Length: 174
Image 1 (cartoon, rainbow, N blue to C red):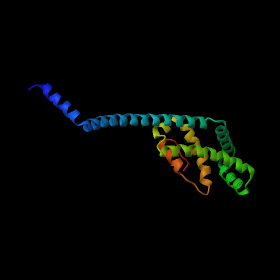
Image 2: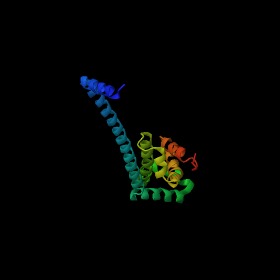
Image 3: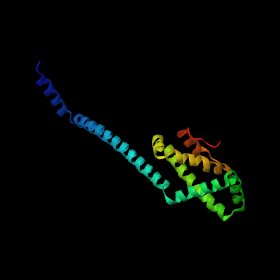
Image 4: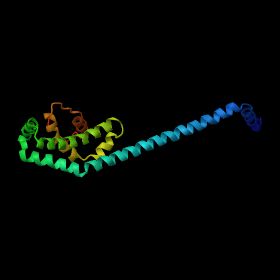
């Protein structure tokens, strides 16, 4: 049997049914389109993650963040065990120094809270968070910030729990 007859029959059938031929070509084009769309989405996700990670590092290294961390660290080191009592008293008095202290605390908490939110939303995966956050930063969070957060009337441990799961070897003040 001659194979050219079978090939010719297929070509005749293809041209005899133009809608079938168009449908087949459209299906092939759709498959290519879906593949390239998937790849573009994956590349966009990687780019978004990289940009977000860079913005987190820029925010952490800002002058304001440095001032906040130094302010809280110096206060904690000066007053040591009395810091919690001092914080409560300043809050009761509604003193201007409490406003400043609380602004610094909030700045740091929001930084870490935003990282947790971005991770939970799938914008940052946990491996990326581990790569961009140094253990010393989490140690600072646990040592200086969490005790102050526990003094607030509404203490939400979700951010602290999140970082403790990522960095389980860092001691947490429970």
